Image (cartoon, rainbow, N blue to C red):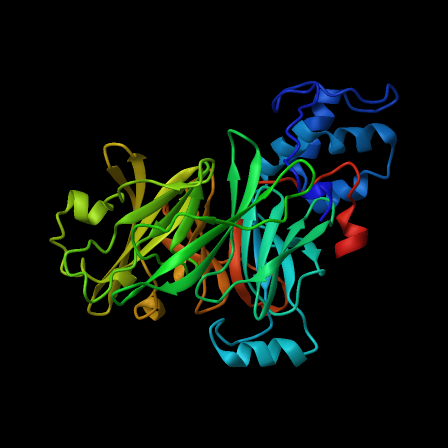
Length: 409
């Protein structure tokens, strides 16, 4: 796998913040601060072309702090472009992706322009799901071992295990240690009837990973593991609990949590906003499929879909205090009419101006909601692409040794 998949390099340069001065060649026409501000306004694709102009420009655009400032101004979503129109749990998906000439790609979509600013074509065939942390992408591959890709260097590593469509791999980052861990789950029947999950973890260390899957303690409740039911926030993995027909007293919005650093399940579940604040009085409270989990700007978020006849409302709750179980409803969104009978959409990013980016699994597109105008829009990309999965990108598109224009587009 190589050392590229080790602990992310968080070494900072001598520059600090958006207003930090940048040394440039003395013969540059513009002062350094003016040139920096101009470059921060340009898309990543244009900056990569400007790198070849002179050494000082290349030095400026390759600086890690400049790259971080640029990424904050130009939010990007990573999307798995999958040419199939089949669902990931269908046998036809395997057949289609095995023999179709097209193969999946990773698209980095600039949300400001809708342009594809980067393309990665070295994606495993039959990929049906991606999990993203920093610049690392973990692929779940149908009937094949999973793969972790460092999008900055192109280095890839084999996970040596498979993931089922109902429980794809989950990639997690631990801020306190800088470690990256991959979670894998396996359905397991328990004594006395019913079933649960076995949980395994693999750590990527400074030498590129120990390549050993460790079995963790069993979760205390059955979990929902499909996309939209899990989230990684601050080194903790969160899962919506699965409610069976035998568990009549279980709350459909309860959340199980796994501390990735200690690899221990927290002793009790977290009560969701509907059960803790509304007391389960909502007539649609008991329907487990009306809830989704997500991470937005470092916060754990629960989405609650309320279906009333031909009207679909989507309430988005942010967890404010995990110890006290305090939730805050920050969005109440009216869905478009064609989504009334579909709940396979969930938020993947929130922009600084409050707009929400949604991954639409049934429609296979990336959509954006603007709360200021209460309107929806498709994130426009070329060719009418179909996206099987999406995730926000918090890494950097600009790297000293990487010119993705020549290699990936």
